[in-house]
Length: 405
Image (cartoon, rainbow, N blue to C red; front, side):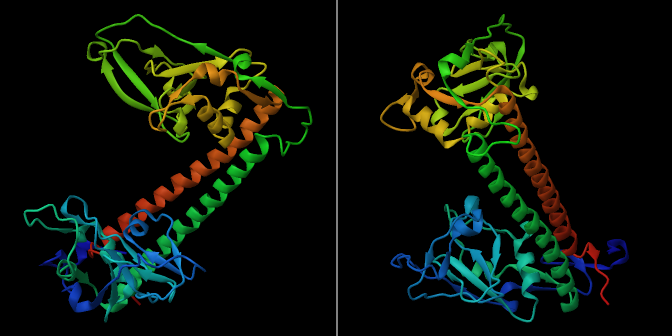
C-alpha cells in the first residue's frame, strides 16, 4: 500500500477522496427492488430461505420454504434492511448473495444490483458505518424509504482498484469465516465431551471405578462470610449471568451508597446460586479475578463439605448440563418462570453421580483445555475483525491505496 501523503485529494459529498475517484449516488450505479410479504407461505421441503431483518442483523436462524416464491435472489445481489431502524439511523449492514435461487426477500427488505461497478466492492462500501443514513422528519420513523437509500453517496475508485479492494476485503472475510467455522466445530466437540464425560458414558483412559450417587446436602456446605461494614469503603459488587455465562462486576459503591447492608464476601472457589435467576442458568464458580468481591443476599454461596469428595471445577462444568438445569427447575415454585423462586432446601435433597476425585479433576482439566482453545480462537477472530474494520476504513476512503498492476 502507498501512503495517502502522496495522493492529491478533493472534497466530495462523501468527504475527502483521491482526485481520480468519483462519487455517485446509489441510484446511478445500482438497481433497486423491494421484497414482498411471505406470511401465507408454509414451510415444507425447505428449498428457499427467507431473508428478513432478523437474519441480516443477528445472523440467527431463518425459516425455509418451498411454495411459489415471489422474490428469489440471484448471485451477486446485495440485500439491505429497510425496517426497524433504531434511533432514526438506517443500519447499512448488508447481506451478499453467493448462490442463485436459494434466498427470497421478505417485505421491508430490498435487493440492490450493481451496475458498472464491482458488486463486492459496493457490498463493502454499503456496510461501512459512514454510510449510515440519518434523517429526522419530526416523527419517530422506523422505516427507510427507497429514495433515502438511493441518495446514498458512494465514493468510487477506478474499476481495477474496486476489484483489488474487494479482493483484499474478501480475503479478510474468508479468514474470519475459517476461524468462525473452526470455533463452531470446537464448541460442538466441547458440548459432546460434556455430554459424555460428565455422565460417565465416556471414560478417560485409566479410570473405570463406579460412579456413586450423593445428595447435594451430603456434598455441599453453605457459607455466609459476613464482614465489618464501613460506610467509607468502596465495595466491588458481582453478579452472575444467565445461561452459565459466568460472573461479572456489576458496579462499585461506597458503603453509604448501599441501602440494604446485607452484603457478604465471596472468595475464590465459592459456587454461587442466584435464588431469583437460577432457572435461567445463573450459577457460577468464583474465580481468582473476583476473589474478595461482594454478593447480595439474593445469592447462596456453597463450598464442598469434603474437598476429597467433590472437585468444584467439576461441579462448575456439571452445573452447565441440561440435567442440572432440570433439577433447579423442579426445586423452584411459582406460576411464571420469570417469577419462580428457588427452594434451596428442596434442591439439597436431589442427587448427582460422582466419580473419584481423581477422575473429577481429570474431566475438569479436559473440559478446561477445550474451553481455553475456544477462547483463544475467539480472540483471534475478534482481532481479525478489527483488522478488517481498519482495512475498510482506509481502503474505501482512499487513505491508503493498493498498487494495481
